[in-house]
Image (cartoon, rainbow, N blue to C red; front, side, top):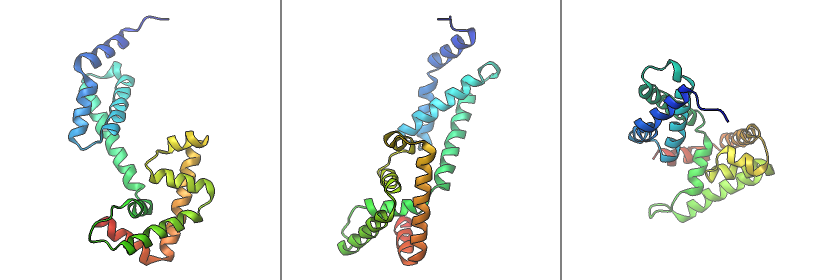
Length: 181
């Protein structure tokens, strides 16, 4: 085992002494980042800091900038991938309240179940796991598939859902209206 280099010792000392990770967590929490996402983003920012360590004159500012950039990238990704799946997810997991007619809720949930039944086996599993909040990486591990394959199955199920919503514009409008309210 080799001794750590001067850069490694300096970086480690900086992270410990400055409590960089905690500062990044607080910074991200102020911007509305969830705890789980904050941990990932802080790790990413520190990794980027380490990659640029020898040429960084203001390490904490660099880490804040990297964290902010990563958070913006994640928001863009979420907005780009906000599809009809979110509308359907809201229909599946919505909580009944006194204003909703139980019959309408039952019909909406049945529409979702009917849609899910039309999917091929793997797409069905990936779609339902996504609705349950599982990440593609977790689904890939469970199914012993590549992450890209899982994303492909999800993309195909979303395409099929879009076609279903185009065939029944009233369903799509009801779903969009409920999510915007």
